[in-house]
Length: 575
Figure 1 (cartoon, rainbow, N blue to C red):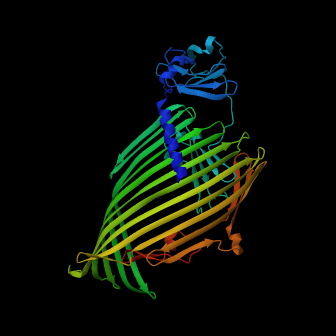
Figure 2: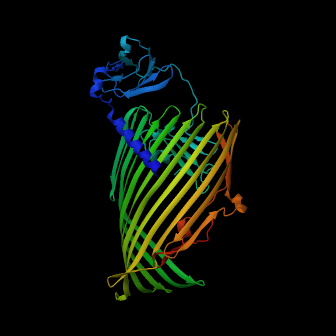
Figure 3: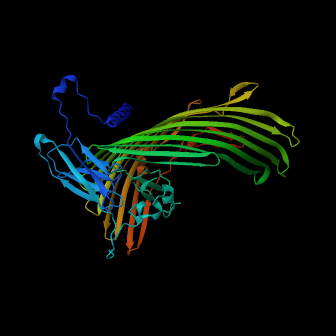
């Protein structure tokens, strides 16, 4: 926890330093030795045909000999740009790009002027519109929109016409087999050994674009609708020098009435005993807010640190009205019931993440490490009144009033690292480790109200549990002509310890529970792909998976949503 707080303090301190953008002010005894450095390179971008300044063009300054980025900016509305506080004795390279114009590169030789001062006026730089008369047609091969990789299908977003000016939802609606400014979407129908063995279905991996332009940019969206729909989102990105700051905040609100109906026939020994009908209306209003912010620190060309913080929460209220019909075996009404509920719940959810990425000189070789801590708490409460009447309206039995009050706290810590190592152009191996820890405590108390006095009922459900999953994996993939394959193996150990606080009853599992069952902890995967000509591929894959029971499937406490709907877990369940 101290490590996470230190990272957050460092992030806030870095943001403060960046925001001021001022040279330190010298003290009085330093003034006689003060030398003002005004080394700078400046100029103006103009349209070749109109002579007008070009606004918001990207101007980047590189160290020519090292080909490394020194500084960057966007031109002002009149086309002006300027780089100040530059070091002398270096060759610089100016790289200019603007939408609708041909790119421009210009080398600025080192200047050894008197006193070592650099003052270079590049004047007006004309940009040529990117319009040319076609003299012929050249056909070039491009990556297709949908590509089958060895263990996933990759849909390249910028190859889709739908992505132009559209949203992530627009793009995903047009992905084959899949019913946000994104770079690509990976569809993993059968996760390999690289992923958690408890992944029951496929994985849709949305890869977000990293904003590479210098300066500030963002997007704001808003929408309203019925019933009670009000949504808004603001995203900002600021990149300058070695730092990239990003922020995203949103508000989401919706309302409406949910309707439900249950028609039940109760039998015993194949003979119908009675019938029960239930009709429910629940008027709800839900509000959610979230803020994400963070910073990327580009230490150098090969090392990047990222700190991300998420703060979120939500509130919901609901008014439930339920009508009940109790009928005999001949469907003759015996008595009615009404249930009125005033429900409320809320939660706060936060997430802190620290990431590190190192890229090696060899293309495709990299090491990544992440530490993520999710934490939060929630509360719930309701007042429920049950009334029962004969068909003629007389009281069948006394009303029952129940008050519920719930609280929960939970936290999840995930530590993981992955390493990718290419072996030539057609082979690579990957390996990684992951540790997951989950701790949760919940108190749910139910009180019956009679004559103004509350009595705690056995429906109360107070518990705590801890969960731990440790894993390591390795995969090897290779391409041999039109045939490619990937083979992998994952090893996992999992443990669940639950406790019913009121009764001191313990439950849970350990998997595998002994060394004799060590083979249960191994999860192999195999992917085979064969190209059939230019336009067809066939793929066959296999993986061993596991289904771990969650808390509600293990919890032996009887949960009663109403007198005729009960739920109880089985503490003897194993993965």
